[in-house]
Picture 1 (cartoon, rainbow, N blue to C red):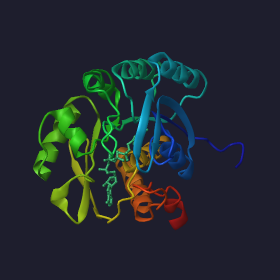
Picture 2 (cartoon, rainbow, N blue to C red; picture 1 turned 30 degrees about the vertical axis):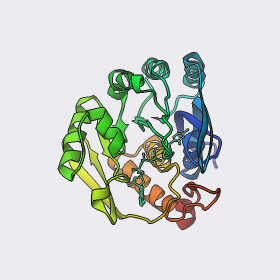
Picture 3 (cartoon, helix red, strand yellow; picture 1 turned 135 degrees about the horizontal axis):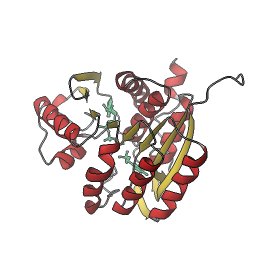
Length: 271
Ligand SMILES: Nc1ncnc2c1ncn2[C@@H]1O[C@H](COP(=O)(O)OP(=O)(O)OP(=O)(O)O)[C@@H](O)[C@H]1O
Ligand SMILES: Cc1ncc(COP(=O)(O)O)c(N)n1
């Protein structure tokens, strides 16, 4: 690498997954695979493996703020993503530091519940997410259940999705990416939708028949963040994210006795 090479930097603000398939670990692996320097602010430590979440230890909000100050003072990122935020106090600290350092290109993955059912966000934290963080975001990437909670509506059809995307856009996110992994109505396909306030764009992929999908949402939003850090627009970053997550699910890893992780090596090996 020549000394003139520009190093793009991406920051993840998320929980640690000891099993390495989701959270901070998935994000940093994804940044690395996509050629972006990865940084992290840890919001919670989870004891977790492919069988589920055994314990959750949220950080103190001030510990999260201090990590963000260390990064903001010296290593300004080109794009930022949030994952598990656990508590309202952590959300407030994150929003304050993002505003203070004017951190750009914020992608919010509004993580609420782990695949096994463990809550990763206190119910009372929702109003802080909506009032403080979403208005700062460049993109929000809810799955269908998360979008239902944030918009207070049922999403049963593609028309409902468009209505939910409009409501999320009104909350202040410039781009809304509604993920279709949890939509049973599309059966053999997974359909993701991006709304920028004007246009709805769709990505359709064959649904891969696997139970090894631990960390799909984290990995996908990290790949989008890596694309944004490299200067891509919203559409191109989502396109990159889709290619990355599809390859990672197609070649997902059968490790552990439960739901294995996606394969972060797969995209680059296929290039
Ligand atoms: N079985 C599958 N086959 C192909 N693509 C999938 C499959 N499941 C999910 N995806 C894709 O993976 C990405 C993440 O989608 P998903 O809806 O699972 O997010 P998520 O529920 O937030 O993930 P997580 O449960 O890890 O938080 C989306 O682009 C979605 O279309
Ligand atoms: C620290 C952390 N962050 C996010 C998830 C969501 O991932 P999944 O829904 O695949 O369990 C998780 N399980 N753990």
